[in-house]
Length: 171
Image 1 (cartoon, one colour):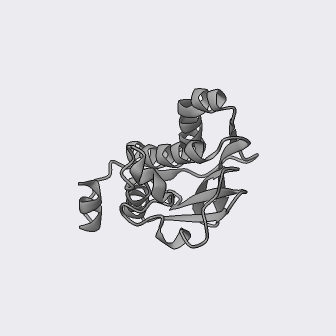
Image 2 (cartoon, rainbow, N blue to C red; image 1 turned 90 degrees about the vertical axis):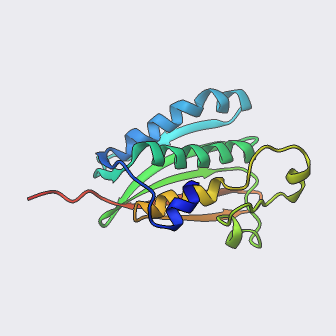
């Protein structure tokens, strides 16, 4: 349903100005115990300077970050997952990177497609994921006027970057 609404440009957003770092810290706290249980380091890499606010629906953007961190935990058996943010021009980037298994170059163009899975065997082993998580995440980010991109190296890890416009100061 959410994808249908997003496709029609009718996904409702309850936007408010928020601190990007607060979103990352909230997400990190939600997954820190699971990461520790898996023997994976989960950390928030806070910038030295404060970041400008972004205007987002916190519930929907939290859903995006939760999906990205959950996927990272699923594909990272050792090493770390880093949540970071940085300001570039009039945009803020929220970055989720891991040292996990990575994504094959042949799969990268399709990972945001509905029902696409990089591991075809998981479809037969009772995995309860629908293959919609990244499609939904991308739709939510695009409904905010932003972009969701990915870079990955098999065996080295994956980085997802959410890029959103900063809140304009009212004069």
